[in-house]
Image 1 (cartoon, rainbow, N blue to C red):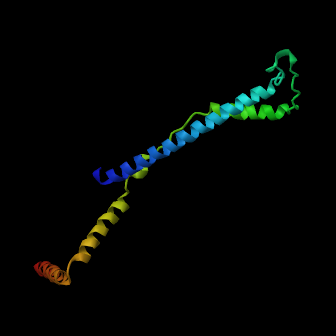
Image 2: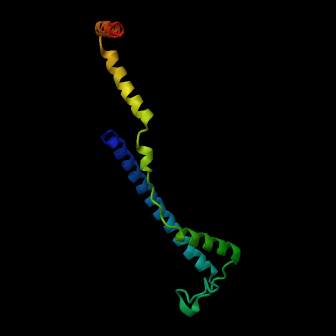
Image 3: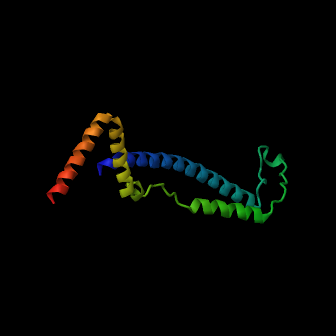
Length: 142
């Protein structure tokens, strides 16, 4: 229906804007989860910090402090769970955008009230006399 086209367009625009924000947030969240997953993989490596170094055989291996494996596993599992969660776009239910019968009736009534308030009182007195005359003729005709 044409009377709701503006509302539908506003709803579609709001949904598109919300999807843009959600996609950016999802992308940032996935990047953070990927970084956390890679960090947990590095921390769980028993040979971390032990390499030839820049000076080769003349460098001393770094003794890193131990990290609790439960913390590493929890971080890895949380990151893997986030990476496995698919993106879900936002959308309005188009039934919610449609106006109900009461909303349509109130819209028509408010338009009629606006027109009625703009008419001068002389028009209303003539209209009242006309309606009274018509009802009088109908009652006499019976």
